[in-house]
Image 1 (cartoon, helix red, strand yellow):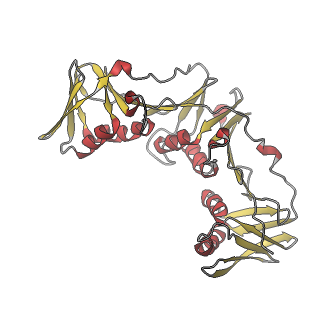
Image 2 (image 1 turned 120 degrees about the horizontal axis):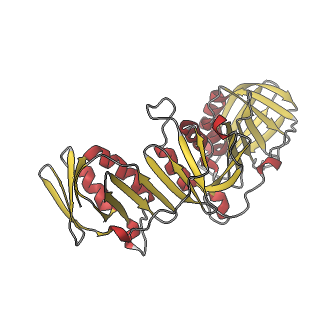
Image 3 (image 1 turned 135 degrees about the horizontal axis):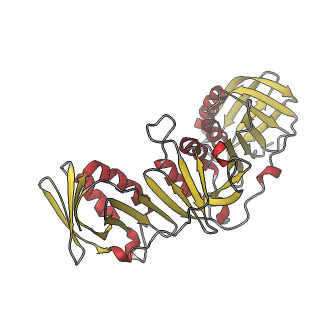
Length: 373
């Protein structure tokens, strides 16, 4: 294999596919990136749970072929190369010479044909959605997936498609984050209900264009019983699906309430962040919200000290004192883009629900903590 290509485009794509490489594995090939040169150059990383492959990159290819190089050292070498281009030469024994400017490295690689191929996902039945919207949906829900693997299905997010609406839901046992968006492109699509690992969605969000980017705002995905394939103009990401029954979240979001609060999101967020300066020193010390006639009083108290703050709000219903882990409230409020939010309560020991004043596009349910008497 012999080719020359631009350093920056190589480094950008190598950094992405390296996220799908195993850091430790009993199979050395899984710690490698596959470099293949045919009509164009492509890079692939695959840890058997998730795989990422680049679209073809332009290069001056004089000899076709493939080789697998250890990802960590390969990435560091390319990052440190001095020139604007990098030349590759790989011989029959997979000894690969990398040259840029006056710098030259030789790395012993592995046969490219031993690299595990990405799972085959047929593309007969595809779904097309806005890439920037899906990126936002991930950002607005990913923080509340379960970190512990005692129930593996909760370490991913539920992706539910029905009647032209895509829903994304995460649950960690203390809160539920829900986001939905109607897409005209899904109106004729079959219903789907799968759970995608959070690590895969995190890496997908990295490569999806943000709103207003110059790239085409489109993403396609395809399903099998075991895998999901996400495809953009630049990358293909294949992930295994998580097995198990996801929580029936719709039954938990209760529309009944005894107290309704309408409040400026930014003001409440800033107040909670101030209170958490004291509360975060001790996880067992929550922030207390006292819902009064026209304000929310936010207090925290630990051995370190105490804080008091007050936020103006429109209150409808009974007054209430309730306590929360401040991080759960802060993360939800940070994820919301609207200026004003509604919060419903049904009692000091029942969860609150944060939602939009304008639509049903997002909902966050958060369990309270018991107040010390």
